[in-house]
Amino acid sequence: MALHMASHKGKAPISVTPRVRSERSRDQIRVPSSSPSLDDISKEFFSALPQKSNPSYAWVKALFLQILKEMGLTITTIETIVRRGTTQAQVTFDETRNVKLGYDDNWLRTLDEEEIRAVLSHEACHIAVLPYTTYHLKMGSQSFVQWQMIFIDLYDEFLAHEEFRRRFGGSKIVEAYTNVRTREFTSLDNVLRLSKSGAMDEGHALFLILNDAIFFPILGRPEFLQWCKANGLNNTYSYLNWLIEDFNYVESLRLSRVETMDRVVLAAGLWTGVDAGSLLKEDKIVFLPSAQKAEDLVREKDPPLTESWLQRRLAMSAS
Ligand SMILES: [Zn+2]
Image 1 (spheres, rainbow, N blue to C red):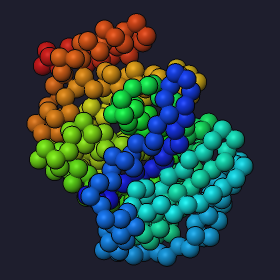
Image 2: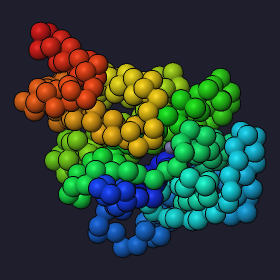
Image 3: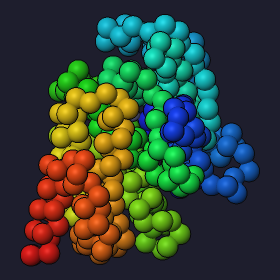
Image 4: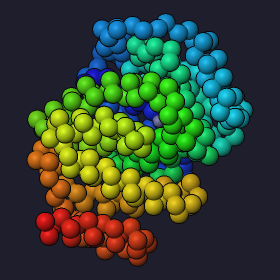
């Protein structure tokens, strides 16, 4: 469990008055505070797994540059950084395309070269679809700030996986990336167990799971549905499909990046009307009393989105 890390991109924060500057969320959320050192955790955790490659720093950088070139993506500068224990692999970049690729070298050694190529190709997809990886967030408490990042991260994974499908659908690289993501199911098992035992907040657990899982339906892969069925989580899969419907809708609006983040956060007010605990513990979709209030709040700014959730809620209460 210690190493259920941010598997994808991370983003540097930005301050745009009256928005807020904030630290990256996922690292803080995922790393246990009692950890002796992140280097030690990473080493201990990943050295226990099969070692499939031994990529040098220069090799990783050269491969990433080659992938960017093959994908026709132009960048200004590239910096590769080893970050152990918090992040598997992630890119950050600003508007002028100064790119930082961070990765855990201990984790990378558990992948074969084809899988490393797949992971770096996924990261390159973030560069292909986003103007920059900076968050624009609404001001509030630290938990509110982190709450916003969780949903924006999930939406950005959706965008990156769509791009991955467009560019690599049907190719060997999808198989390789599927293998990488499927291996993460042991982490999802742990997240599920922790949430069921009360050791992890259920909403937090749900979105950790969905962040890793959204790859599968976007690529038309059955593995996450199979995992849900094996764990009695059919309605979690249905819930994820609702979110994907919303993501498709938000994408269709073709808003600016800042407006998109605002819209995702607005939509999240509706998503969190579903009780995460009932989903994960009882496989039930239960709307919280706050759901109707959220609809009232969102309705004026986005009537179609609100209508979708009203219909979903009414359908559930009728069944
Ligand atoms: Zn990603």
